[in-house]
Image (cartoon, rainbow, N blue to C red; front, side, top):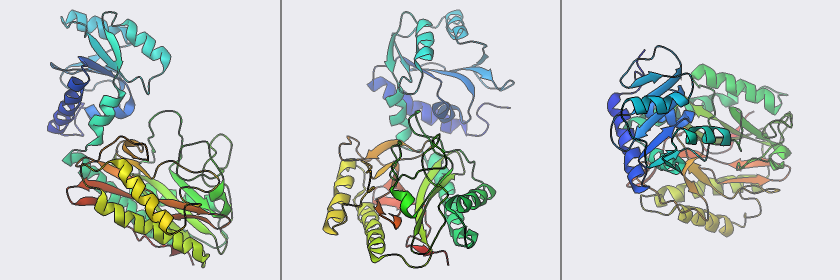
Amino acid sequence: MELHALTPIDEINLRIAKIRSAMIQQNLDAILISDNANIYYVTGRVINGYVYLPADGDVTYFIRRPLELKGDNIHYIRKPEQIAEYLEAKGIEQPRNLGLELSVTDYMTVERLSKLFPSSTISNASQVLRVSRAVKTPFELEMLRRSGVKHAMVYRHIPNLYQDGMSDIELQIEIERASRLEGCLGQFRISGGSMELFMCNILTGENADTPTPYDFAMGGGGLDPSLPVGANGTIIKPGMTVMVDANGNFTGYMTDMTRVFSLGNVEPLAYEAHECSIKICRELEKLGTPGTPASQLYERAIEIVTQHGLEHYFMGHAQKAGFIGHGVGIEINELPVIAPRSKDILQLNNVIALEPKFVIPQIGAVGIENTYIVTANGLERITNAPEHIISLD
């Protein structure tokens, strides 16, 4: 099977060109890529191995598994030490400044790889790759749009999945089943080891106010201390909200979407906060043009929340998140970050998720999340499911 068979070679070359442009700005002569998400970005598939990407010259693929991949510049290895041996045999000089993914690679691996290049200065290439991936190509945008369509289809099924007496985890299982049948890959890829999540996060009633150790907008106690987030077995009862934040990975590129359901009516405060969330999204859709500081979107959201007197509940109650949005794509936490101290500036074809949410004690979480493409005219929404609180009755 061909290494790049699933992604057009012109697309691969475009991505490599973007990385090289960022490398020049950081004075990197080469990058050695080993992280799954970045390997997927530059090859179109996940392999066990390394991609040696010089600022100019041929890209070399050092592969452990799978066997029998075909393509130019593929070299099979058993151990990373063979990378340096191969480059030397080819007459390729060691780079003066070599980039490794220091933000996501463990210390022992960094030490081992560094020893292969004793003449090289080791620098952190993680930001170069994150910046390169932040602006999506037309091919990537199409993958995201496809995920958005399927994602919305799943959400439209949710009222029919609920049965009287269900707990949050029982409803979650039915949503996950519907998602998989729609084609969801199931994987929720998150960069780094400090955040973990299963393929669907459901918050019901008071559990929405339970703090979690992860840097997510919403919490939840979870079913076990080994994964303390999300559904905890709460029975869905009248007057509660049910917030659904389900996996949108249908193409290798993930959309992020949250919708709220209820059993019967809920307190007026919950409806007010939910409508405020929708209003924030409408406002930021107009504001989110190329060149806009990401922090400006956050500030505008805070202005609207304060005007409605809802700041006590915004982005959590017992514990608050310090952002209202983030980039999405191969991973769920890409650039740019929509936060008060963010230095990011929106660029054409960034893809971001906005999630202005509220937690109302005893009632539950409310608010929406949508995935958007940054266009010259503002934010284009690609997760088009109904946004108001939907009855499960």
